[in-house]
Image 1 (tube, rainbow, N blue to C red):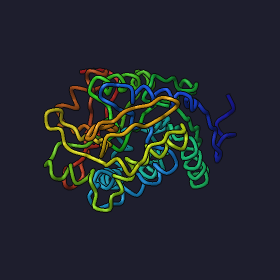
Image 2: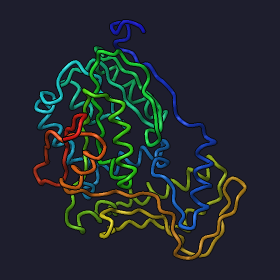
Image 3: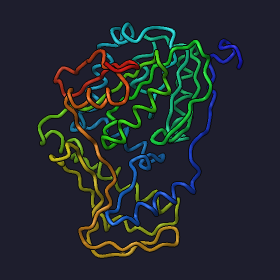
Length: 326
């Protein structure tokens, strides 16, 4: 391994992302289910990333503002709690806007962003390298929703994962525990996890957040069909589908669907898929948690919750956990 000083101000890019053929296989498998479903990880092509950045600015979508408020106000406290001279590993780094709020306070030994959106990750990592020439950056294009192994790191460096945006809510409880266990294995016995998650609240607030007045969330959802058409040669007529997001109270989650407005047949990858009127493709879940719910999940994954930070309206929580159960 090169001495760390030789890497400063540049980006090492490691590509572990699945090939396009895997996208096709997962799409056709998802559309073949009795209840059609696609993974939300496929939202994030270049246009999907752009639309999500725009969603984060709309008034109804409070999550990004709430988490940003926490990180802006509490960055020094968070840095003191996490400790210094660590490797900061971010899952689903996106544009890394929130990360910038931590970097100056933490001064990590290394920053390792993980994301499945290859081009977006490369652009974001290069931008950070220009802004923080002292920072060693090792960007990893990977599908972290599947089992993954981090590239080798210097054994003495303590590792802390950063998982913002309430992205953990995209996973059902069993899958969330499995993902958290994988993060625990990645950070090791003395490692930690700084994670953001959305708290339970009034249903009206939740439903507005996923049905913004500008229609950006609808366009974000429908863009998945455009991506399938473009990359897999699908023939979805996007105008024949509508965005539908609602709170499933029994399961404690927002669900997003693409609903067929009429009976129709669609071809993807040489296969035909029939839709009845009103039949949907389930594209995303976003679970909402109480502190007790999240503690139970974290402990089941082998973490111990240490400290919570909340936004002023107490809609969102950033929690620090360390390896090892109570």
